[in-house]
Length: 440
Ligand code: IFM
Image 1 (tube, protein in one colour):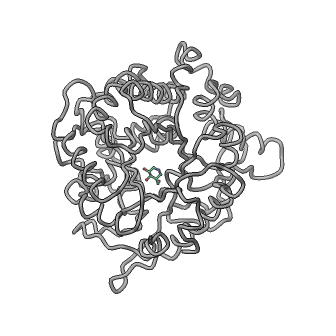
Image 2: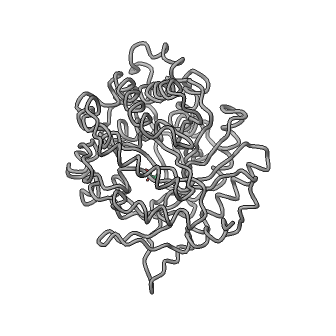
């Protein structure tokens, strides 16, 4: 790596991030069915119809995985709690086995000196709630608040930080407008409802957790830089619209108590009744803001229905996901988020990383592309810190190769290789390089 721990402020924290459905193995421990199980079981939705039933068998192997985190010298572990594991019906009955599991997980982190950073929801909606309309149903805010109280009632006393929802854009737009993720809808009214309800659920959970006396609560946004395909005003507006519904909508709801005009231009007729009255809940104060950053998009205008645009293939080097590598976007987002939304609030990069077609050669994995990617993005972080942006942490996505949702197990994001037949873990060159850089 081209950096050392000492190149960052003294309290800067390094961590690694994962999520429940992607690694745990949802077949174990009495977890209920989720909308990802049914989405994956429907032909055409997921590569090879793969699901999270086995994941990386982290459910049984978390001790070994936490040993790796500790060995790498990382300070924090960002994990998520599966709603369907804790409450298989989504409401009512609690699965004690699920609570016991997260209890053991928490203690296993603490025993190794790793700070537990929880995200309550990383996409595995209990199927019975999907039957009731899922994120389209306003009641989800209350159901989610109840789940927050149940899970944090058990492990909240030992959390370093908690965020309610991972990537509201993915929960709403990607899943209800583009249909790429469960529940696979392509409907503008469903999208408008989900976008608003995901924020209402976020605020409700923050309110409930504050009520329980929990602190260090945050919000996590995925951000994608949008550049116009050319210099025309039409292309500029197309890119600004993409930026508005992808990035600004969620930040603006939570930090400005309003939605951007460029989004309301398309979504206002489809918003749920009374949405304007929900901002006091949505904008519950948070203690930090998380930025998940991977890439940028080139956007071109078109004559189709709103949002009147489409993505264009860009010229930059790409990852295994086909995503352009654009570290400048991270720098620009850190600057802009602080300047326009969060001010002095601590920022954390809660996800950043790349998929790479990693193979084992003579027992080793030479993922130099990932090392370069991390170097370039941490350089962008250092630049932002030098400019006075209060960035306090960086979490690499991800610890392990895992279930990459609609793309199945093919895309490898881990700094530790997983053989999905044997579940054997093999640290890649990036793991060893990070360990070297962070060594205390
Ligand atoms: O794997 C996902 C994760 O679940 C959410 N953020 C982006 C990652 C890579 O696509």
